[in-house]
Image 1: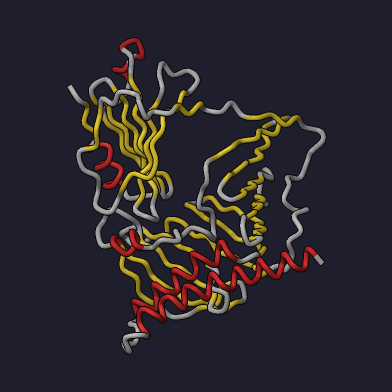
Image 2: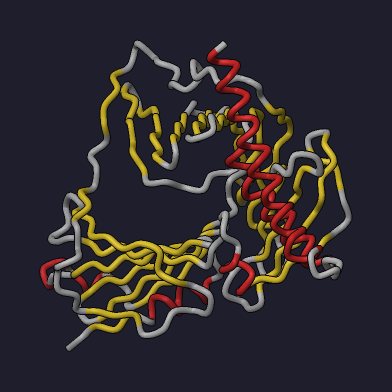
Length: 341
């Protein structure tokens, strides 16, 4: 009886979340007697997809392809009315598992005779790739509908998200017409080439609050060890000898920390920027004269799959920028770092 009651609460909360999105939009556009435009309707559908990925309980298998790499992932996701629980199992190659609870991520990664347990900060994992607040995305992208299609045996509404400049990639989303869940996401570069594709090939809603699945598959023949974590240092009162001159349009700082990395002479600054969808990391590391800094190129720019890397040496520091964004974006952020004299 208690389990049934919890399921009803979770189901009702999920339904209420999705209804609230539609109701809010109806109040905005319907109360004035003005019919919503295609763009307004599209943004409402995208907002519903952002909520559905978190508020619905579902399981399925999706395929992720980036460059020549492809992997299948089994996902189980549960929302109990308060917390989210998700378990992702990599089905190809080494059976890596990712468990997350309300943004706290733990990765079980087989390495030889050991299973390395890695802890990570909250990450947006498919299908929860969209933020609940779409305002920053609206500032940097335009959204338009495309022809509806079928994905994983389900009818889907297709939306195209295009950047207003060359500082971010474009996206195409397939959203379940009934439940609002994101079924497929494709990222394109400015030449309309596919950079990354993630899509369900099977998916269904689940009606249970049992959590017996929310645990890794234990291999009793291997040792489980915690990885050597990078120590994060509070930098609230540490002196700052650098500043960002100007960020690319639409990007803003969402986090900053100091990391103490084994083998490095001092802590490394880690700053994270985002435009609401794309994410970029900036690392600033002091280079000692004994580090043979002459061997480090003054600047390096490269792209691997959908990820761009830029590094330069600036005033005795190595500045590195990494992100799933065009090369122009990482170069602008890297060159915006100014050291105080």
